Length: 356
Ligand code: 5AD
Image 1 (cartoon, rainbow, N blue to C red):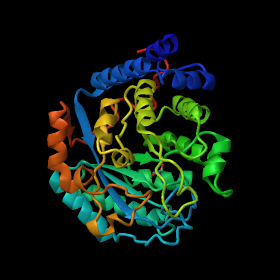
Image 2: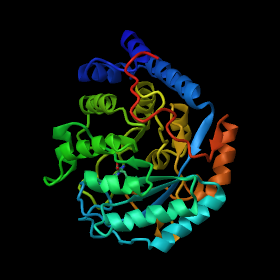
Image 3: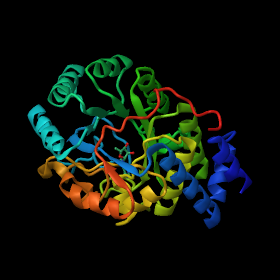
Image 4: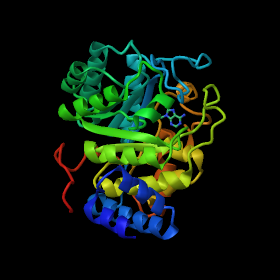
């Protein structure tokens, strides 16, 4: 327990080896439960019982990258490609706005059609439609200059999972033309421009052990992102990883608790991948310290086309249509569904390096 207690006290560990040891020790039920309780208590301290709701708009599945695990990678020739028009996106926003959504997450592949001008116009139109909403982008790696233009157009937040912080492991998951160093630099650029920035990784991706996960945690400690996205790896039938095992629910929720303790005020979603892995995944994620849910606001006709992995959930409580059901089930568990913007509650750049 010593190591877990020290982690809870300091919100960090000394090095990669200590994170690896923590992961190992948290296999013990008692240690895992201790971390879970501490995580929930930290979430309570910063956010009470609130669970923030974000409207996810998956607006293009064209992608110039070829990440080996991903169902919409460039080489996935069976993927049926789509790109929403500006009007379709604005319709999703209007629909979401009427339902009460105040954060819109624009997510897409790295689609060369998304020029700075096109994105900036879109962001400005959204902000005109609903001036008090937050716009979160999740459109991959771009230049500092591009990130700056989109920020100037009004984008508030940016999600860019690093996927894995270990060089060797990064090479198992990505083709030669992609670079972990570029990814990391993008994250630093985003932070430097004042975006609320989200990093994150898949749990149980092929080739991943505690060694790699320990590096992910160390990297999060260094970056201090305002948001963190982690969900289980799930195989996609048209990828080289089709026959690989899915990431484990138990390990994913353990990591959610650890990330909550590492970054006490982080905005941490119970991801769609977790809900896809297990019918009670979302609830288990929240019970481990997550505090965000991102229902799908994309047009129904396109939802099946944004298949990052097999059987991706996009209806029921995973969808905007299921919002009242989601609210009810969350309330029954003692949470309060919040449609507020729910910004990171501290100035961007605040470090939790000292014991709180
Ligand atoms: N399993 C789980 N998550 C995946 N993602 C992409 N492919 C998969 C997969 N097969 C995740 C990546 C990406 C996010 C949008 O979806 O982490 O950052």
